[in-house]
Amino acid sequence: LEDLNPFIIENTIITGDFKATIKEWGSESTDRRGREFKEWVEVNNLCYIPTTDHSSKRSDRNIDLTFTNMGEVRG
Image (cartoon, rainbow, N blue to C red):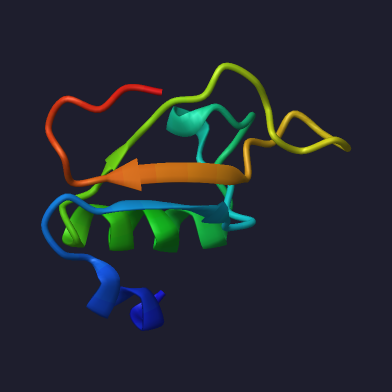
């Protein structure tokens, strides 16, 4: 995650397969990686952009996540 820090500038959108599950972001539960990732998102003042479906084909996990620091962005 630290490798992404230089790319977080004004009006940034970050999306990817983070393999982190966070209950508040559509997964059934939060795992260790999810807790660490959520903390990184909060420290970097990013907001989660919700999706309409689970991104994992094998479970109800939502692992493809999108974030932004722009004010009025919606999924």
